[in-house]
Each structure stands twice: as structure tokens, then as C-alpha cells.
Length: 166
Length: 418
Image 1: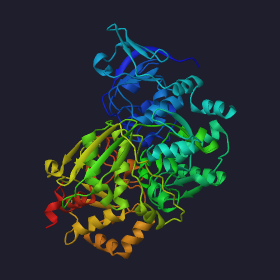
Image 2 (image 1 turned 135 degrees about the horizontal axis):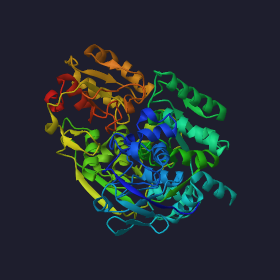
Image 3 (image 1 turned 135 degrees about the vertical axis):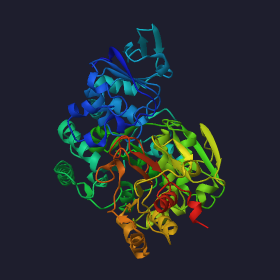
Image 4 (image 1 turned 90 degrees about the vertical axis):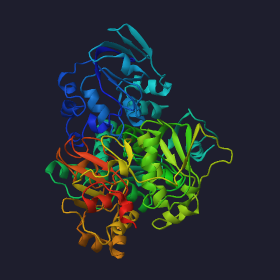
């Protein structure tokens, strides 16, 4: 899987969005399609209803805190979003995203420079975000090589197979 | 090297590691609960399709449910039991207690271990001088279960040094809560936090637990305490050694040191909507409450139940309040029974629940309407965890929960400690 370039409209949420808001406990045993219908509904009622494949979620600080449930990443991936960009992520969400194969970038200061609905281009390989609406370009915090390799492999399950074969 | 660097080095077959290195380390213990066991088991059986290399190192505890209220949940628990039997792993069924306390009491935690778990509060086991952190379902299913290994980036370490003696009415829980507010949610992302100082040394191990427990909510990867004979004595209550302590080298340095004096710390309350919104109890006193609960990751120890009983002595639960007591292990309930606290609190109006995680995420209890408000010793209060996203959850020590249970509103426990 080549490293992703995603282009889509921005959806915005604030700081410290917990996994409880990404997928509440009462939906964690349902299908990913069902979870996706409720993704983020507590903090952004329109997101799950109107998100389009390839759209970009833009979050504030410490996105995905609280419970380390990997289904939070899987449910977001099931909405069809192309990438998540945040000022910072909780380490459990960050790790889970690469292990599952959801492209994410950490870009300090991004929240104030993107309005909801702006068109963004996220290039994981280059570590860049371009806001086509405003014309601004941002550089992300570098991703450790191991995680890029994991993302390229399609997540930790195929990556672990590679490790086992070595 | 500090002790977690030493653990990560020895478990990955290296002489030395430094922060930033990525290692693949042997895992000694994997902790799963009833929610994560189900999700992880499905990934293992349907996507990874490998056997579990060391089933003896896996501990599954049903702590979010004590008696499922729907067929859907009964199926989840049944699937967990089937998974545990099929793979030969030990599972501790409904009513056994909270995942972390069951793991400690059943001998799954030892100093020097690498402990991973799908519960984000897994860093609590750093209290025993172990390297402990939370991982996701796919990491457990693809590496920990089939190979007994996990990858880790060696974190930089912060030092939180605590001195002084707590004033009356404040407890280790208030210190932990204050630190989350002061360091801030996300204030130590990816770091390890070592807790040191005369205050930490003065605490019983059961109180020390509350410090590494908090590290996840300031964003840290793990927290730990350099262990001592006290650590061994605590673990020896339930499990057999040998316990081999791993200590810091004498020349350790820290990326950052934070100093605190706890001598004047007032009781602290984490207010909705996040664990980092921490205020002194005086600032929120008078807020009406409907439910008071002692239980969960941050409560439900015998110490909490003793504090609750101490403050309630001579008082009744306010008629507008439901007081819920949830021991975090069967051992705690038995201890409370032997000390007469079960009867005493029952007569004061408390409801006893089976050992477990209590109202954590309202999986089995503790759902609220948009108009209800709870004060509890749980570890989290994010909207959506307890029924309506508009319901409000305040987090506090057992003493502060007790004061609220008596008055029907948030109150300063020092009023009842004269």
C-alpha cells in the first residue's frame, strides 16, 4: 500500500476529544458500519451524517484520549475519512492509528489555520498538509520510520507477518 | 539507565537503550477485560489466525459486567469464555473484581515485568517497578498473543517529586487529581513519569497505586515508582515470589523535573467535562448530586471503603442520593465484611454491588439521564460514558464522595472530620 495522499473537506473538533465521543461504549459491539453512523456524534452532530470519502478530520490537542480502544480508530476509518490531522494525539490513539492503517499527521497550530469545509491535501509520505482554500502549507511532526513502514504494510497484522518471516 | 530503560533493554536482549530507540521486547503479562477480550479475540481468530504462544501469561477479567442485562451482552461474555477455554487462558468471571486488582492478586504482576493491557490504565502496574502500558487490540492479537512480544519506543522520562505531609481531609487521590489538573491533559504525551520524594515514600503501596494510574490522562506512556521492600510485602499478601527488584542506576537524569509540596493541598474535584478540569472542593461545594459511588479504577480499595465508613459514621445517606459501593476485588469485600463495614454502610443506606469496575462506562450499571449528576471515585468523567452525554460526572476521593452522600450536594469532607 503506497503512503496516502488524501484530498477532501475539513471537519473540525476541539481539544481532548475522548474515544468515548468517537465511539461510545454502547456501540462497541456493533458492526463497524453501525459504529461509523455514531462516530463523534456527541461532539459534532453533522459529521457522521454528512462526511464524504476522503474528507479530513482536523482536531485540537490530545485527540483520542481516555480509553485506548482500537475500535475508535476502526470506526473512524469506516466513515471513509482519508486522514486525521491533529495538534497532538493521545499515544494510544496514535499507536492504534498506525497499527490499523488509518493515516494521521500531527501538525502543531493547525486548528487555527483551518476552517470547517476548507479543502485540504494531506500527504503522509511528505509529512505535509496543504490548505487549498487559504493557500497555506504546513509541515507535520516527523513520523518514526518504523511506523511509516507499518502504515505502508497496511497495519501491524501484515507487519507482524513480515517480522516473523525475518 | 532508569529502571524502565533497564527492563526494556533486558527484555529485548540489549545491553543498553536510550530514549527514542525502538525495541521489540518480551511481554510477561497481557491483561484483557470483558470489553477488550471480545474485540481482541475476534481479531486473533478471524484475521491473525495463530495460536497463543504463552496462554499462561494472559489474564482476562470480566469487570465491566457482573450480570449482563441483555442477550447481546450475555453473548459477548459467552464468546469471551469460549475464547478463553479454546486458547487455554485464565479468565476471571463476573464478580471477581476490577481488572488491575485481580491481576495483582492472582500473581500476574511482578517487579521487572513488561505488562501490557487493553485497558488504558495499565500503567498502574508501574507502582511495582514494572514497565506497564496500554496497547490496542491489533497489537495484542498480532504480536503479543502469537509471539509474546510487543514493539515499544523507549520514552523520555519526567520526574514528579512530591514532598510534605497531607493535611486532614486530603488523600493520595487528591494529589493524583491535582497533578492531572496542574500538568494538564496531554501535558506529558509519550513520556514516562517517575514519582519520587518523601511523600511518595511515606505512602502505603495501595495509595502509591493512584499515582502511576493517573499518568494516562496526562498523556504519558507509563508511570513508575522505584520499588522497595514495601512493594514485595504488598505483593506477598497474595502471590509467591521470588520478586526481583529492578532499580534505577544511581546517575539517572530526567528530561524534566516537577516539584510539588502537598502540605497545603485541599480536597480536589475533577469537574465535567474532563478529568483535567480540576478545582478545589470549595469552588464546587453546593452542587446537587443524585448518585455517589465509591468504586472503579480510582476507588473501591479497602482504603476507600474505610474512608467512606469513617466519614459516614453517625450519618445517613441523604434521601435524595443513591450511594453505590463497589469493591474492586473479592478480597476487598471480604475484608470490609470482617471489619464490620459492610453492615455499617448498609445500615447507613448504602447499596453494595458485586466486585468489578462499577459504573465505568455504564456497561452494567450507572447510566444517567440528562438531568442527573454523579460524584464518584471512578477515574474518568468524559461525556457519553454514563448514559446521556448531558449527564454530569464529578471525580473525587472517597472522603469527598462520602461528604456529598451525606449532604446531597458536593461538600468539603473537613466539615465532618472535626
